[in-house]
Length: 396
Ligand SMILES: *Cc1c(COP(=O)(O)O)cnc(C)c1O
Picture 1 (cartoon, rainbow, N blue to C red):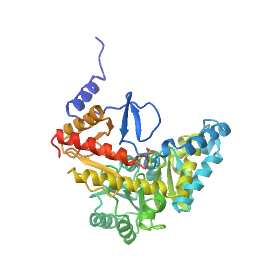
Picture 2 (cartoon, rainbow, N blue to C red):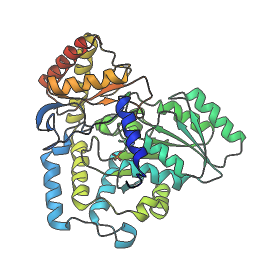
Picture 3 (cartoon, helix red, strand yellow):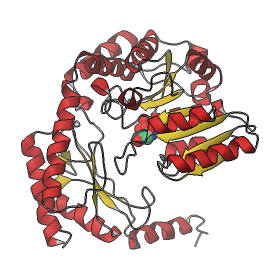
Picture 4 (cartoon, rainbow, N blue to C red):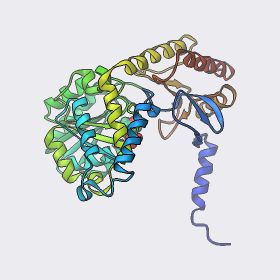
């Protein structure tokens, strides 16, 4: 018998299965939409971040096709070496105007944007102060930075002020406060206005990750800074093109000096190739759709209100979301998995259980992602399915 050096990993996977923490990845055959073919079965889609239904929008598909014809498929190399395609410049100009900032830089994903901007912005003489529930990509960006770090209690501006005062007392040169805009597991909105006030008092920079806010909050989906009217008071806005915008990619938006610096020093910009031409073209089309009309954003909110009202009225605990993210709180990891399995097998509803380590142990949930693509009939069908399974499992 050969020595099995990776056997411990098999045991770790088995532990996940035993603990109800094993994540089963489903297979999707066909485009995104309110209904999907998953593992060969047609199901109602409550899983994707395709908030506005743009992931299979004909205008995006058309833009990607014509970019393929004009620019081909690959970007060649990193932009600093192979040159930047006009499509990437155009996308950055579109994002700059849409976000109402001085400049924007396009990166490969939201994850990459966070891991690129944070280490580029702070050094060993600086301190990062970060919300306890920030997204994993922020945590990883913070880990890559040489700065000191402090964690403040979730959305707690009082605790943030304590940490700001500590950092100043310790002689920090620059301070960077980082928060998610919308917290993706609970759907609550960061108190960014109060955060900006507190940061202002201590001359700290503010960075917000708007991944679940853009296309959702603010005028026509312009995001959390617009929602609170904080233009010019939040130094760094990170975003993704993979959620409401329906494609893939990330960006950082902010003052000219910040973006100039990132073009020189953000490692993912220097050492990783850009999104492909069809991706960039589709992203441009999606920003244009949002610029033209708030129709999709309005429909998203109407759908969310309707679904939440249906779920509350039958007795589900749907947490304290302020956005279309609808967490159905279940309290037990195994119940959450069983609930999700029954929804899929018996009711043809695709809604994944989310448990540790994505959320803390003991507070698993099924997270329902509402989209402008859903019809009222879809939402009624989904709520009825939840009600049936919820009663069977004694949850409601
Ligand atoms: C989804 C998400 C990201 C990652 O975005 P990608 O473009 O998919 O890499 C980053 N931050 C937050 C808060 C997110 O929700």
